[in-house]
Image 1: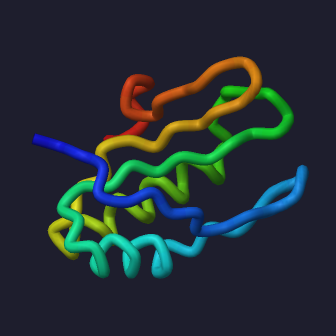
Image 2: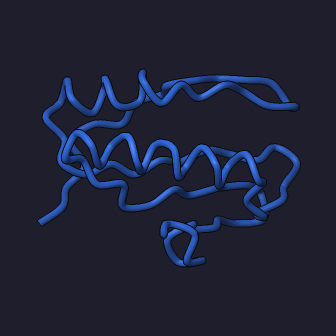
Length: 93
């Protein structure tokens, strides 16, 4: 069964954005012997719509994680309006 092993803040940014480095994300997953990961980030604008860069980054991390036998379970966007699961939206193909 899945259980949260660790919660990590990988990157912090301003209102206009931040940089999430897939190498740092996956390094942390390997440090904790994770077999699954869930990504989460906020949209200060309040929009729950995944941006093109959100989707591209998600796919990049999913592919790289797969090479390390780590499964990306979800990428969740949160805002003052609620949350959006990229898995529920069918965007983790």
